[in-house]
Image 1 (tube, rainbow, N blue to C red):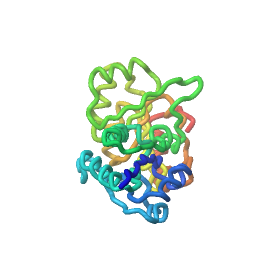
Image 2 (image 1 turned 45 degrees about the vertical axis):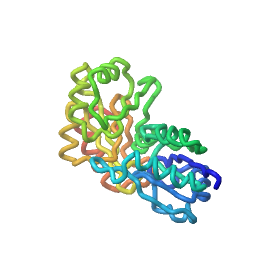
Image 3 (image 1 turned 45 degrees about the horizontal axis):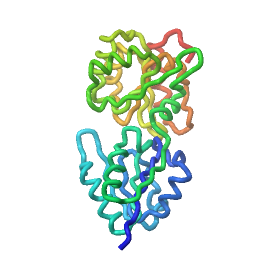
Length: 267
């Protein structure tokens, strides 16, 4: 029996129509699809009509399938001659453990390719009208995962570099992150935007500033998945949804939080 192949596919930030053409084409030829929690799945059966579908998504504090078991599942079917698609939210190589899965395939002699996706680190802030860079405001941005608490060296590096800070998987460690950034000299008045469920019907945006965001997170009951944006570019956030897909709660929360956070900003 000939060896099959594996394709890692980035599904983008969550909206069905933000998947790439190549991603959809690859799914049409899949025999097996292993999909993550944040991948758009509403129409997955029609996109991959001949495939077996398996949910291997990880939720905060609960991994129904370990990463090692995911590797074993990928390789088992690929070595049976099947085309295995690993469907991931965002981009496979941006905090998606894609490099580990590619390494496992290469070690086993299984052909593997990667289809990039639109990363949530840039696209989800855009859903709120927040650019990660803006002429005359900043010329750099840093993307970091706060799934595990950031170290003192990481805090120092973020503050020293300057520019926009984009934090993924940061709700659970938000208090630690805020205290660390302020401890290393980031202004307490630095604007902070949080975008939950970007590009989904229940998208919600809250604006605050660094010394208040932890309290805002508690009162507004912010939940994952969410992208945090820290920096002056947050003042450019729009008053209404950029995508036309957000629910009415988007505008209410955005305006209520922003009025207190940026009293002089033209929002």
